[in-house]
Length: 450
Image (tube, rainbow, N blue to C red; front, side, top):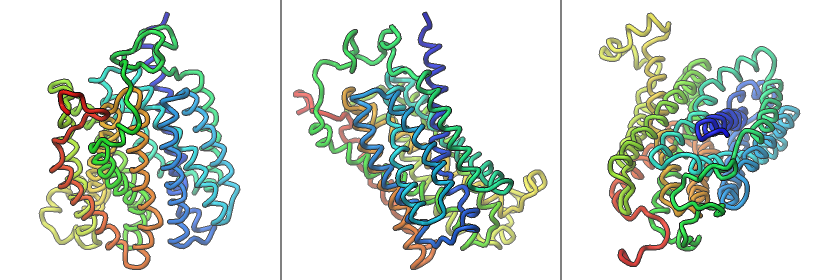
């Protein structure tokens, strides 16, 4: 009989490939946006409406999926969602109106919500607590892989064929992989005759209950849950602003080329990949060293450092990126001059890509950590629900990064819109620092601590 190693490898590989396709098919509209705008007339408001419709649907669906993952097969949720995403992307490629784009992207968001919550549930079932953050972070790099290669692949295909072929092909591949995931993913060790890993899981207890299950009311009354909610909303919203609008900001307001805009997006995702893995690994080492305690989480120090890095890199991105900035700074030239000969890029362009990588590193790290903390701080029977709640708030941030953000940019400027996000991120970091040592164990307070 196959052991933990075989099943962990096959399950993790299936989820990694599957979620890479989830994310690629979530961002295909953003990837091929310039090509679509050449064929279909779209204003800033139209673009914001389409992206916000997906974010709104994703927020609703991810919450529902998180709750459902505590009650029904996570494997079935993950596979069915990916199948629907593929079908919807194919239908999108056949459309040509703003109304159709908005409706289909809304349904894409609904299907997208069935991707990540099942992953968190399955990871917690198959990996030890001191490994959980690392594997969660590694799995989350599937988003960075799709986000870094996606713009280049989608742009190349759109130029070589068309944006319609790009969406149709990506949708068809997602459908095929969804079927494979149904066969390779296993919900928990007990399903294949192995002992469960979660503490307190007993044979015949499908939920791995520890005896006294917490209620949803007790979870919702935990102040720490709402600290995580606000923090995740701001971080995810700021990240979405840069991934959805950073390219247009560079082109329309900073006078950069489309190639630099897409390269910035790729650099951001590469930095995000490194940030996710670093955050997971280092925070797991902190947990292994100090253990999970009732007040203050060992992952907080790293989380706060990265949130601060987000605010600083956003400020530098907004203020220092100009067409003349590279040529006016001697220090800048000394740092980047050697690289200009290797990459054939100017100092200014290298600075833009560096800022993208740093922002990606500092934003995707906290995104991975918020999910890990919400999952591990909650009672076992409500871990999926806890993650669903914080993910709902994160996607509210994603929604605010759509139409509301583009409306501010239209009525004022891209610079003003990014300044508001930058200040919000800085204020949230300070507030989180002040609350870092509150009670972090969710659920009912033990009588000794009451």
